[in-house]
Image (tube, rainbow, N blue to C red; front, side):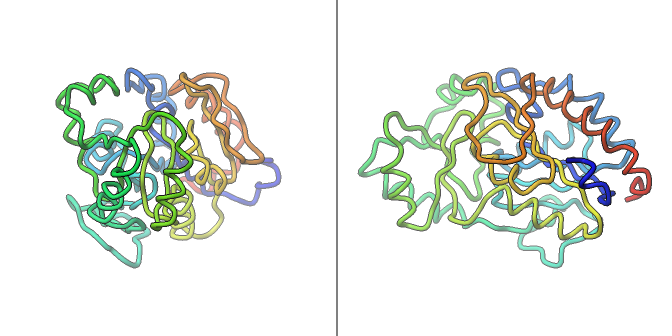
Length: 279
């Protein structure tokens, strides 16, 4: 596969966060840090493409020392740091100096659709739960709950039983439902992580090799649109049922699997990246 992509010289890494770059239970990422350091040295952009909110992702970017674009709420918007080049032609929203290109509908529209459907189906929004219940479901400490609730484009929720009628009802209203590692996510129809890959790839232009890493069904669109797709096993359900080919399945979960797979990618592609270390 890599040999077929030999003319591509610029490496872009698109990665899910929970259960992929960071551990599903502990939220730690220690095992990924050595490989992240190598990628920084090579000036390879690591683009977080997550269901997390802007404040959650912004904080993680600071912790990891990343200064690349990042996408939030399952492809609802992609944010570019101040002074970033290449800069997108449009800027739909500015937050903390970040220029955001928005693909999703505003949260008040998503919320209204959710409440309408909730009258007929037993669905519960995470935003309507108290902090204690959310902490029990996610393992997050209390101080991490407000950023999780800071939704701008999507509604995370829970439901037991057959989700298909709910999916169909939302679809009739112009929305879609994605299954994440812990919650279902209600978002705009046509919004997905794959659009982030396409947008950023076009922005960089030239010869580009994209890598995608994810562990859930909501990563399928991203994995389908990257040149090298890597599926990380989830500790709750193993390998997600994604329809992506070719697909490489990591042996280990979370940041350990992420680090092993990115090490493999670098070993195979490093000779191709020698002329693309300048950004």
